[in-house]
Amino acid sequence: PQAAVEATLKAKTLSVDLDGFKGMSPGNELDKCIGDLRKKVTEDKEVSLLMKNDIITELEGLAKGSLKAGKEQTKKFEGKAKEDGEKLGKEAAAASGNTFVGVVEAGAGCDDAKVLTPAMDAATKQCSDKAIMLMSNMGGKLAILAVVPKALTGKVSAKAWSSKVLDAIGGKGGGKDDKAQGQGDASKLAEALAAAKSFA
Image (cartoon, rainbow, N blue to C red):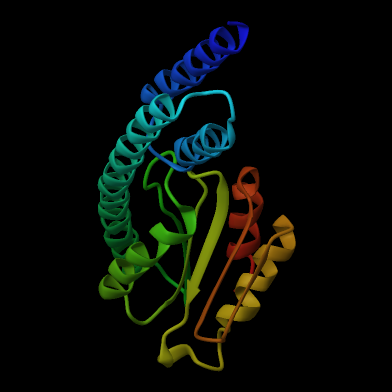
């Protein structure tokens, strides 16, 4: 009957979608596709329960693989961010003045805001007496993080510094005088660097 043919065709279409996902790189895009297809399969009234179960089992396998690969990728990004932070911290220690601005390049697709924390930890271990602002824009957003040591309290405000940069790139953020962060348009790194360097 026609209904059975349509159901089989529908199942094939869903399977083709599923096969398409198998070639995708782990990450938010794949996770969204998995979620969308799971919803489509669950709500479909024509595909048989057996076919639904098969597709959902495969989707769950893909989701687990994506999660595992995503965690491994995050570790790689954080490792590269630490390396960059250490190098930038040494540059900051050798630089003159009270402030230093650096760019972290943890890798395409990284979470820009998340990679700045390990980078800053590494940087401040190398240079603990300067106010440091780090930026990252390789993951699709421009994230900034500013940290001011106790020695410069009253002289430099992380909040005022980051506000100046975020105003220049149309971004948003917040924080206190000793630590502040925010995000803006990834394409405006040059403007952000110029604003950060002209602050002090």
